[in-house]
Length: 297
Image (cartoon, rainbow, N blue to C red; front, top):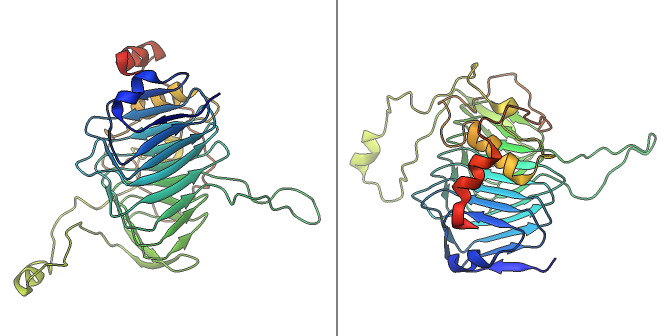
């Protein structure tokens, strides 16, 4: 299979054995396909700015939600892996992510991502127990909820789940942890700083004293999240054994960009190890997806 590289939306028509659905605008960006049966799905209004998306294998999936903000990402998607990014995520610099070994990185709606952030689902080299000779470091999914703020130079590593409404501080290293909603974490390794917090996305850099005084209280429940029966954290990640088109169907049918307020909420004491594979029913058939793809191939 030859390498196929897209640097302009007009290149989509020439794709073979891979597919782009939607009409992303590429600005100093490129999409590279090194295998087959890979699928990039873009909602309306996706602008890729200084971005690189590399499908480094086959059966990869990338789902990019509509946004009023440009995407600044450097993604490497290996065999049978997925990256799902929700709507209106703000990138203050390039998010760098490598997803490996049939894993998924899923990011919810309305997140704020600072610059220098890395996400990786694998170590990636193998570590074994010296007595049993069994592998110790399996790759695992990463799930980031809605309205999560991740600070500068943070490392979010395999097996991490961050519940909606939480904060991961600058230069934090978080691996294999479940962070409950509306909590703040920082450090290496990450530790709980405070519970019962929420954040709002206004930037204070140019504020006057009057505006600072006005911000002393914010009476809203918009950024408070509660784990409930509506939470889909355990079933959000699609089975990696499914073809890329069926994994896309899973995300479209299970609340991508259209879920309840608490869909990715995580309660205190919950544990998500990043290895759960959603097996939920796919409510829309592949024939319907093919119709929506239309002439985008």
